[in-house]
Image (tube, helix red, strand yellow):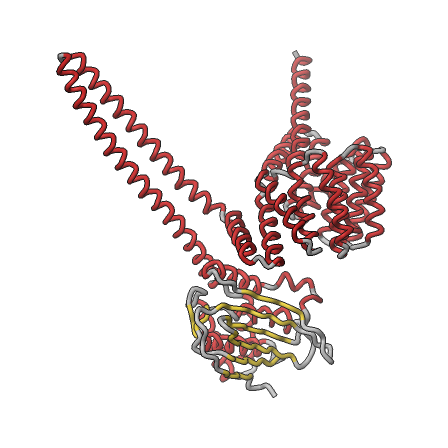
Length: 608
């Protein structure tokens, strides 16, 4: 009996291990296509392997989690999962001589590359190559060389990248890994394209496209044709660019790849624009915006689907009721025909039949009218929901206020209080209160006069001057009607962004901020210039551009709501005679009516 129980437990253990191995294998086939389904597979595999004490399955599951988090751009968790897998592999010598062990090093190398850890990126890649050479696994060796080539390709070290790509290509050919060959050609083309050698890029993109076509890799044809179209567009070969972009659009639709279709629409809009075909360019820009909205509004789609389902259910119930009524009338006619005299039956049957037809027509007409009314109501609700959604987003965006600014302003006022300057405290506290009241009361949906917007902007600048100990001066030059109506809360986010990311980090003297507002035709142009830190010098500033993000979101929403383009352009200014460089931010705001131009210049009282 004990032997039978032991045999049963062994059989159960083998069954669990087989299930774990199957789930991990399915993950590797699924995670590039359906990330949500792949996460379910690897989660179940990890749980089963831990419960059953299956170390090999746990190591493979954690390695797959590394790939999953890498795909999700969660590089910290990807590194944690990969290192946990390596720790388990290292406990058994036999695990170190496997493809899975080497592939985990490649996944870790990719993860460390994404967090800019160059030393460990190359170290883990070389480790994977060493494992592949030790176990004589040509496929793993090719993957290692391919990744090493990608590292040099992104750094535009063409010779090194080509060397490792060619080594990977030889091993991919030996293992007949078609997708790997196509990826190599695509990556090589992208490298030459980034370098500006578009003719050479076309050669490799065409090679990748040929591989896709010859091996029926139809799902990848979208990428192949898009790369060709994009590169021909850069070469100004617009006819060829359109031909390939049309194919990219076709395959994106055929395989329901919304993001690829979005890129194809955008590229076609740019190509038509370059050809001077304004109508076609505008049409594809509209398609791009519509598709982007559809991708980003899943909840809205679900609501429409729910309404459509309700409509379908109502139609089905109505049809069932009609069928029931038809059956009842048919039974009544049959009973009357059996019970009555033949002649009377014929007469009554004729009358009843006539009555039945009239009832059916009335009911049918009434139902058709009701269905039409409900359909119209659904479309009205759809339009209302769309515009309400835009307005709510705009209102919520307007409610955003930088808590760090309030914190800094109050700390500054506290410092002034400690310096026993009550008059300055009173003035600046009043300005802070007015500014906060303005932000809380106004919404980007509100129209305010240009004078009111400038007044609030001056309050903000004076508070910032106080916070930064008057390290900068400002100048506001208005060449427009001060009663011109503009959306509220439009300028401040960009001014705040310039102060925080350009002026405040600068160690130079003589810092200034020039703001110019002018009307050109039916467009209000707002220019913000400074001589602080150049944006391109400090990549860390991108993480703190909260004002720019809020302002950009606001402009995008106003563009969708008014169907007029609200644009922002940010550029670094060249260095002058000194060491100052600076930034120039330009806003272009369309106006409904052309205002009367007037010139008014407001200057900082402390400016010399």
